[in-house]
Amino acid sequence: RVAILDSGVDPDHIDQNGTVIDQATSTFFTPSVSPEPGPRWMDDQFHGTHVGGTVTTNNIGTAGTVPNVTLVAVKVLNASGSGSFADIISAIYYATNVHVQVINMSLGAYFQREGRDAAQLVRLMTNAINYAHAHDVLVVSSAGNSNIDLQHDQNYISVPCEVGVQMCVSSTGVTDTKA
Image (cartoon, rainbow, N blue to C red; front, side, top):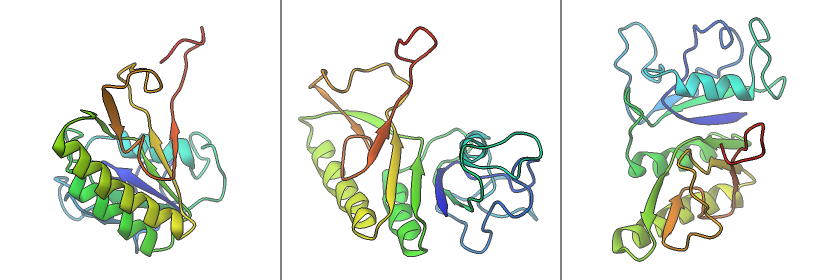
């Protein structure tokens, strides 16, 4: 069971349709603006559906990375891809408490390390991620798309990437340069 904390998941997408999504535990912290009768956790942007399809699919159109995975859609981002860290933190606790094995967050923001707001956010996010870790949930987050060298730039912190016990992932292109 993998929780996709993102813009939602489209249960009617050809690659997600069927038994891939656990509709009973999928939920929203930011409601969908899609017309009824769709679920309130319906994807308004396609990013969450894309991320879910990278994890797993029903193998009709494409094949995801891991077979036989059930997705739990946890909508925390709106139609423009924005959301609040309060919703994201709440969603981490929710996903942990509905017994997922993995939480995926392809989202985040950068903050100056010295700011008071950053310190409080880091503390709250660390508590949530460490709560998940203490309950045997692997948290995976994205390093982002801003081409920032997180290892050497000491002025910024990437949240949630650099907080708590988790795995932060990045990618390189075909020439082995940062994506």
